Amino acid sequence: MHATVTSRKEMEVGAKLGSIIQDSSAREQLIESPETVLTEIGAKSDVTIYADTADLVHLVIPADVDKTRLAADDEAYFEELGLAALGSCYYEDLPE
Image (cartoon, rainbow, N blue to C red; front, side):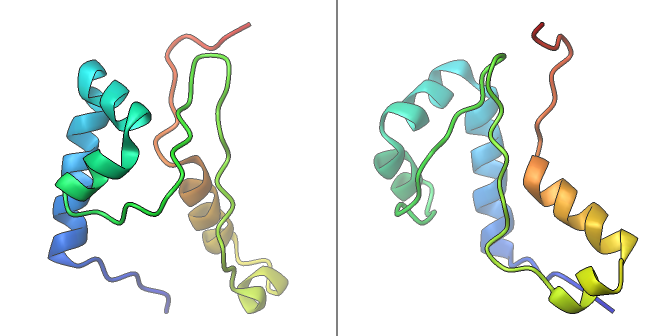
């Protein structure tokens, strides 16, 4: 069985990031000064921020994959990888 354990701190940082991303002013600050904003909320600041737009969506490729599950054509694992790669990418109006 495959399980992911998320710590309380990771959940808190995730909630703070979610709030920032939903607030246009805070989102802009995150894009302009990611190290400062991430440090303030207790997240690692050694990351690169790629902000999606209506015309550009970034696909995140996981650093590690389970080769055994890939070789076994594990559909649940493929779904996990897809969700991880797409994150919360969702647009009501798709660009033409």
